[in-house]
Length: 183
Image 1: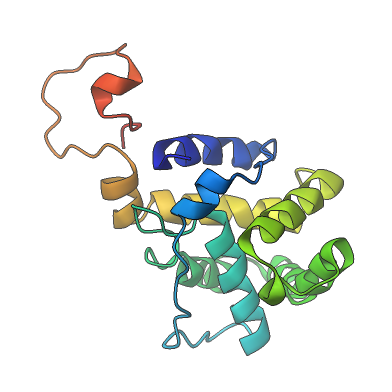
Image 2 (image 1 turned 180 degrees about the horizontal axis):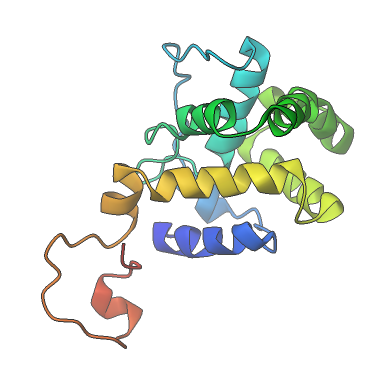
């Protein structure tokens, strides 16, 4: 799957309607990222921070364009939950995150840390289908998409960034815009 198709599909994730079929093309284009050992979460427990890291890395992994880990989206999510959420919402998020690996085990029989990428995608899709659009997982996906497309990597590398765009052409084929949506 080409990166532009993946990014086009992420907009559907926001509404919770995307079901990503596991495809060998998509899986072969993904590079396994090394665990960022320097990230020490200030807010989440070690276990919850590792779980958050694995979930968001599954959503938008590194391909020919850096993914969410390179864009520090895990730090964005932590900061947002810690600084913006009120006490009740913060408590809800922490509880849901800490129990999310158990939910993954319920659907797949294994921890997310033991699953291959294809199995992670299938399991997360099953959770999304069963829980619907107001679930913790869909809420987390919204964070990931917002954080990624507000990062420098998301804007300049994933989208068609032009600091000085020149003339405006309102309706052109996607191929003329180098196959990317505009930032």
